[in-house]
Image 1: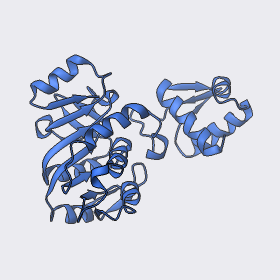
Image 2 (image 1 turned 120 degrees about the horizontal axis):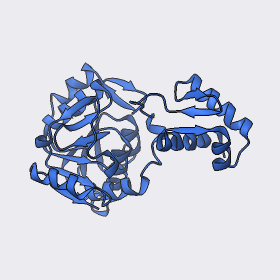
Image 3 (image 1 turned 90 degrees about the vertical axis):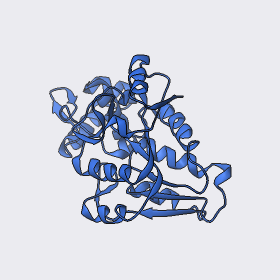
Image 4 (image 1 turned 90 degrees about the horizontal axis):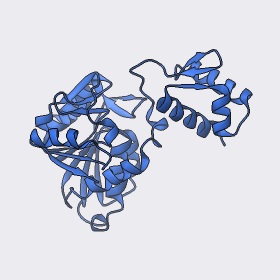
Length: 259
């Protein structure tokens, strides 16, 4: 196992459990305890975790993993959600995609749709996520519009007033939001206020707003609100979502799709 793969696995385990000890992690990854100690020390230097005697804990209660370390979390649920979201987009539409692991999967699902292999353009994609733009730029039938802004390393999203300038000049059919939290009372939210501001503007420029969120994101709150629940038209999630939570979203007027 490469160092990057090992670090990714360690951080996934740490976020899931909140705490790891050296021997436990070494057994999980089938490597030596000395290797895990070095990994913990190096990750602590990057402020990715907090070192403890004999192990490590997550870096604070509002801890946010960089995108490259989040891809394996709830992967199958995100792929199902992404396909269902992609199916809501019609050929020829202009769609906005925020950053995040689920919206990245939406981009991939759109890229392989058989009815989007040709057109002038087959789809217009507006995004502030560098990784999404990079993946879709090789599709000549897609028109890719990237906002300006300053790159945020955790999510690969462009943020700041330069992004505002582009989004203020366009109109889109659908905005697909990736969120860290979506609560029926408090709305959709992100960890970072600048990221939330760009996502909010994308929603304002859209005819309809779709939240793509696996069930682990529902009923949660985060620091920076993107938009009110009433501003969202459709929630696409997975079947592990709590029925009562989904009922509250439906009562708020949302179309709820669980896949």
